[in-house]
Length: 128
Image (cartoon, rainbow, N blue to C red; front, side, top):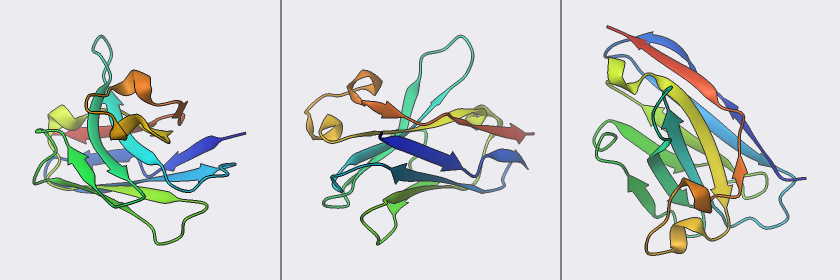
């Protein structure tokens, strides 16, 4: 069974940093789109950053550009993807989810619904 194991959330003051990790489990194939999404109550889940493990190509939401960095570990299976979050703001407070799919990010337009596997989520709280 394919699973995603997340870790690294927590509480931090504004201006601080956190690193989230997402590790695949049970995957046969090693080339994946792996994305980080976040959601606050009452709002839609929004994409933060995505990486395509085959080429290392990345995408960042405007809110993440210049502050967050998505990267992957050198090992292919299991694959671990990191989200380094710097200069955190109170508006970054949310539940962060890791998601993976073989093809989602290869589409011209894609969204959360295109990702087939999701982690359980990890809470990030930034206090001002």
